[in-house]
Image 1: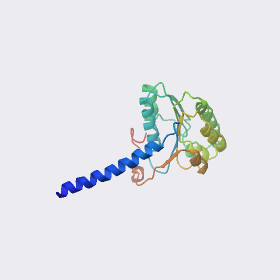
Image 2: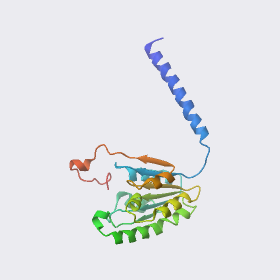
Image 3: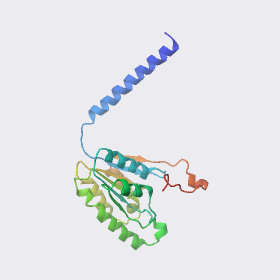
Image 4: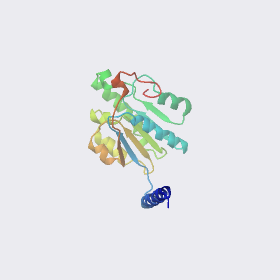
Length: 203
């Protein structure tokens, strides 16, 4: 047997073992319900990942609600696209900008409460297959919204509904209630090298 044949045989055996492991895990995953995902960490890509899942859900003809906290008044690429091409998506943006821009805690809390009043009914409505709360963790970190209220809303949402929360931090309670928690870690960032935010990538 040649070296190539030995390598191919070894590879085939390893892949058969891997397939058996994957098939076993798929077989064990028998619960059918919506999932709650937290995308956190200091790296870039949390919101981008969430919007990737929005497109995935739309591909299946699912009903989607998207609510963005702490986004600026400047239109974002995702907002422009959804409004122009996906009118079926219920989209709401807080639109006050980042807290270091507003410098107005009372105004930020008022805006956060208004935004929560928009998203809370979605978390009670079984017709929504997916609800995205982009940058929600900041509302918890700055104590703009009541943590217990948000945790209970996520925990008691319709059984088939999936929810995505993005943003840095947010505390242990939000992590505990979520089914999947992924952390995006920053290795390098163009902005630190003096490169401006780019339309279609950052905006």
